[in-house]
Image (cartoon, rainbow, N blue to C red):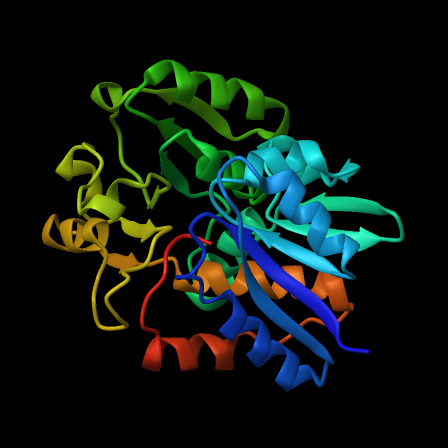
Length: 283
């Protein structure tokens, strides 16, 4: 019997996840189907429950349901508990386990695919919302020299830094507003959604010069287009700009492994998407 998986969100029609998981399944010879599962903004629980009642084996969760999913599942892994958000649900009999593969996916893309060293690095994380909460723990696990969280609302950045402090492992960790930023950074990660509207976060251009700049978004218009943040960072003198398509593929591979106990190769799928991706947003 073919196992059923899906990505639940609102909206969800843009998602590349069905294409990614179909490619993983073909490469690993797994008998599964993966579909889109749109849900009204107030009907996550009912839609997820109906999917599993009909025999569904697992779900990916995208905006705006990741935080709600964390409260819906029966148990959370460490990353999901720290983030307060779930992007992968695994069915185990009558119980449901929630995971967050976003942060590990980001780290895997940065280190394995892009060759960016995180240990001992000076890192600026821009944003303090759900996307930032999902990646701060895995970034700290790589033992950067310094991790600064910056946000329009400084108090939210400070609160996120305090919540993550038990995971800092000796890394200097601080949070604040954009107006208090200073020093030099090796890596700047944009975890805001400003780029969806063509905007960029108001960080000083001087901080970008010579840094690797990573946008957790990727451009909807196609493989040749840069995100707004990457275009701005390149013009401001960034050493290198990277988008979030690799993160999307890596977090999907981790979810696939949780469901199927098989780790698919991500390189061929990422290369395939780079050649012909026709849209997408944050995972």
